[in-house]
Length: 243
Image 1 (cartoon, one colour):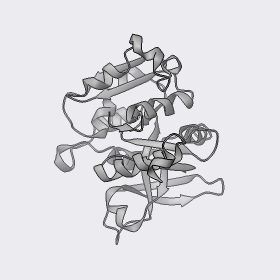
Image 2 (spheres, one colour):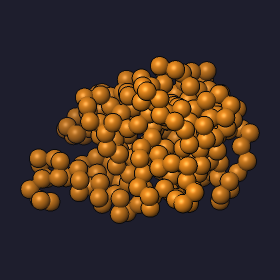
Image 3 (cartoon, helix red, strand yellow):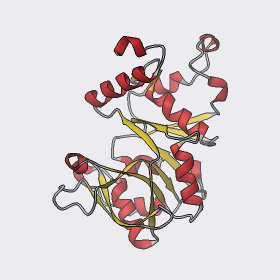
Image 4 (tube, helix red, strand yellow):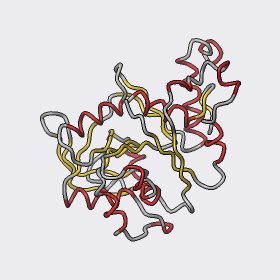
C-alpha cells in the first residue's frame, strides 16, 4: 500500500493486469494487510477520485497466506482459483512501464503462447545486484526468447552463470503446483519459486522473455524513494516540483 504519487503500488499492479487483458484477479495477502482489501471496496467517494478508475477494474478475489513461507508457498494458495488453466503471477512490490503501447505482461503472454511452457520475464542485472536475483543459465534463440536450462538463486557474482535475472512476472502452467508441493524449505524456512523453476527447467523446459520497458522495484525504502521521484519527474503535475 505504499503510495507512488497518488496511488498505492497495488493499484499499479492491478492496472497492469487489467491493461493486459486479465479479467480474473486473485490477490494473496498476508497478516496485517487488510488495507489492501479495503482499498478495492467501492465507496461513495470513489466517483470523485478520478485517479481510481474503479469501473475498469474487474471483480477481485482475496485469500490470506496464513504465514510468510515464501513466494512458492503463496502461489500454492491460488490452485483452486486457477484450476487447470495457465496463469500470470505479478509481484506486489514492482511497477512496470512499457516502451510501447502494450504492457510488458502482454509481451510475456505472447512469448508464452508461442510455445506454452512456463515463461518468465528477465532482464540484464548489474554485477553488484546479481546476488539479489534468481539468475538464469541458458541461450538466446534467434526469435529473442531464451531457453533456460537452470536457475541459480542469488549466486555470488563471481560464479553466476550469466547476468540475466528473473523479474517479477511469470506465466505458469498448473503443473507448477505439484512441483511446489514437492519442494523442501530453503533459506529461512521459505519455499522459493526459483527452486520450483529450476525443476521445471530440467523437466519440461523454461523460457525467458526480456523486458521491453522499465521495472520499478519498491522493495526497500531507497528503491521506493527513487521510484516516487522518477514518477513525479514524468508527471506534468509534479515535474516542476522535483526538477
